[in-house]
Amino acid sequence: MKEVSIIPKREWEALDAYCKIANLNKTELFREFVRSLLTYQPPTPDSDEDSSSGES
Image (cartoon, rainbow, N blue to C red):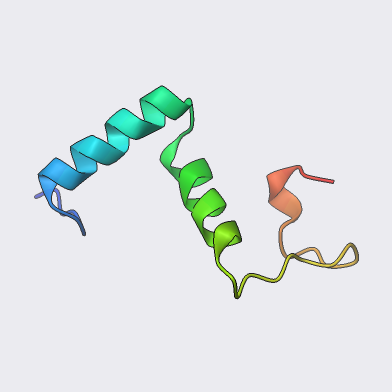
């Protein structure tokens, strides 16, 4: 099976290097990016939409 990426290899390598420096995995980095968007609305306390994150 062929490996497919949505970004060029050089950009993927830069992302990987940044994650190692910042001590984040790519999922955490992506979540931080999404939360930084002006349109992001955090879930309400009664919402179980983000119940798997472990945040309180």
